Image (cartoon, rainbow, N blue to C red):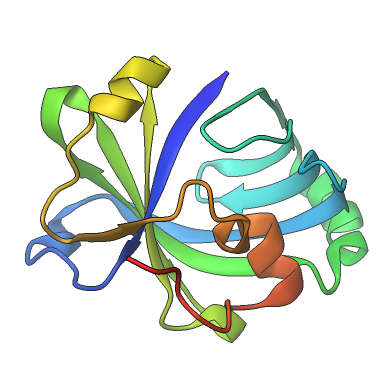
Length: 159
C-alpha cells in the first residue's frame, strides 16, 4: 500500500545538490479511467514495471524488477505517455524522505514533492516544510500518468 501526499514546489531548498539524486524516465503501458496504471521506469538502480491502483492518498502498488532488454522492448509501447525528471531524496522530519521531482522535456519547470507515509493518520498530521507549495494530492492533473498524457496543467489549483 502506498500512502502519499503530493505538493507543488515553487522554490528549491538551498542545500539541494548535497542530497542523492538521479535521472528518471518513465512511460505508461496502460492507464485506466479509474486511475489504475501500468508503467515502466528506469532509474540508476535499474528498470521496473509498476502496477498501481486508482486513488489519491492511498493506493495499492506492486513493483517487478525488469532486465534492460525487457525494458527496451516495452519502451516503444509508451510513446506519447512519458515523463523525464531528476529525482532528489531529501530527508524530512520523523525519518520521512521527500522525493523531489524536477521535470525535464515537455514538463520543464514543473517541480513536485511527494512524501510517503506509514498510515493515513501520519499523512494527515504531516506539516510540510516552508519550501513546499500547494497540496495537489487530490488534483488528478498532477498525477504522473496525467502529466505524461496531457502535459503541464493549464492553470495551477487555487490556494
